[in-house]
Amino acid sequence: MHDDEWSQDKAEFVAEPADSPHPLGDTAQSPLASQFALLTRTLLDTDTVAGALDLVMRATIEVVPDADLVSVTLRSPDGQLHTPLDTGPLGVELDALQNHYDQGPCLDAARKDGLAYTHSGDLATSQEWPLFGPAAADRGFLSVLSTALVPDAQPPRLSGAINIFSHKPGRLGDEMSRDRALLLTTHASLAVAHTEAVRLADLRETQLRRALETRDVIGQAKGILMNRRGIDADEAFELLRRTSQDLNVKLAELARTLVTRHTEID
Image (cartoon, rainbow, N blue to C red; front, side, top):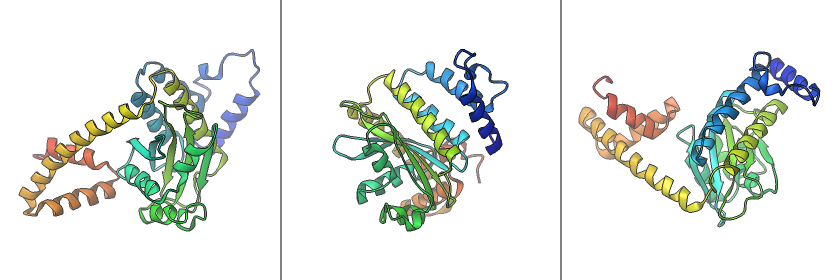
C-alpha cells in the first residue's frame, strides 16, 4: 500500500461514525482494512501461540514499508531474549548480540510498561545502543523499530517485542510504519492472550525441537556440498552461511532446499 492510500485509509477510519458498519467489513474500499480483516479472520482459526505470532510476523513484512527482517522476541524473567520466530537468517544472531551487550531495541521495548516502541534510523552511530547499533550495522541493518508484545505480562507468560529491521538508513520512524507496527502488535498480543500462556518451558521445547531438526538437515546439506565440491565440513558450512545471507534465506531453509532438490541444483 502506498503512502497516499494509507493516509486516506486512516482518515476514513477515524472519521467513520460510531454507529456505522465496521470499517473492516468494507474491504473493497479500504486496502489497509482488507489486510487487517484477512489477518483477523486467520487469527481466529489459530489455536497456538506460535501460529498466531507467525501470522503477525509475516503480515508485518507485507504491510510495513522497508521491512527487510522481522523477528518475534520473548524475554524470560531472567532478562534473556529468545527468538522462536524470524523471517531471516540473522534474527537469532541480532538477539544474541543484545543479550551479549545487554542493550538494544528489543530489550528496551520489552522492559517498558504497556504498549511501547523503540526506534533508530541510524544504528551505525546509535547513541541509545552504542555497542549493539554498530554491530547490527556491520550485519547490514541500519534502521530498527521494536514494539512491545504481551505488555504487563506476568509469569508464566513472557514479555517481548516484534522487531522490524531495514537495510536502509532513516527508515521505519514515520507515522505510517509506527501505526502499522502498533496495530500488528496489538493483534499479536490479543491473539496470544486468547490462546495458551507463553511459558518458557514451551519455548525451550520448541527451540530444542527446531534446533535438532535444523542440525540434521544442515548436516545432510554439508555432506552434499563436501561430496560435490571436495571441501571439508567447515568450508561447507561457511558456504551455506554465506549463501543464506546473500539470498536472505534462512540457513535451515536453504539446507532443506539443497537436500530435497540436490539432483536439480548445480
